[in-house]
Image 1 (cartoon, helix red, strand yellow):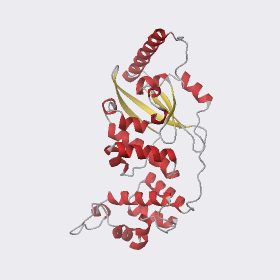
Image 2: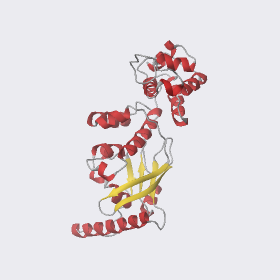
Image 3: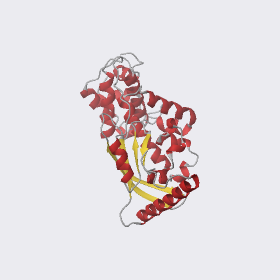
Image 4: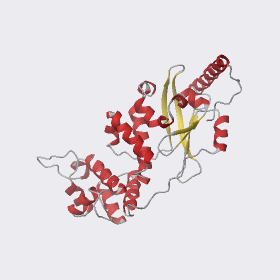
Length: 302
């Protein structure tokens, strides 16, 4: 295996990042004097995993190694990986065992017509996301809450790009860094299945050039396949809205996902969401009249 194998590179980067976050005392070792690294040394990880330092070093360097599942288990324990990080380690290592010349099948990301119809009738903000957090479709409430993706060029309709490149994103998102880490973790999970995907390289490359914050957070190698959570939105018209969100997979392997935001029925957040819908509908109707467009034009599923 050459060092330019994409999965081997990603595996080495992941191991170094996880090693760097641990201190010797975190794993029962004495720090000792004159340490030159903030985290564990390679030889300390090798000792904890029961491996030779040379073997572990070759893994971090992406050189010719084919670790067994037992070795991966030992490394995961030595680095104190959680369940999600352990799965990520196994995904990368097993992929790195395959020849680099093996091509990953990349089907175009499509939104089924039935999903677009579903978006149109949903009474809550919802968007369809591609593997790399591209916004593929949305409804009017999502547009009211998040902004109109049509105002952006197709290549920039991406949740991660919007979060790092939109100057107003931090004001609308009080938990900005937590959200950024969540999105980055989701992108990391996608990269683990296809590190050389052109869209992944485009998003990561552009954000690495444009944003020091992205470079800092991306280097942490956070991995998250979160499918639900709670998020606070600070909207200029209706104030703070706290919404639950859930992700539902759509057909395909891998396929897009449906991201849906909901409010607790009868809550103040539900009332604010209803007010937002009313304000946006009034604004859209006024704009349509001014432009001479028919009011019945469907705008909630794109």
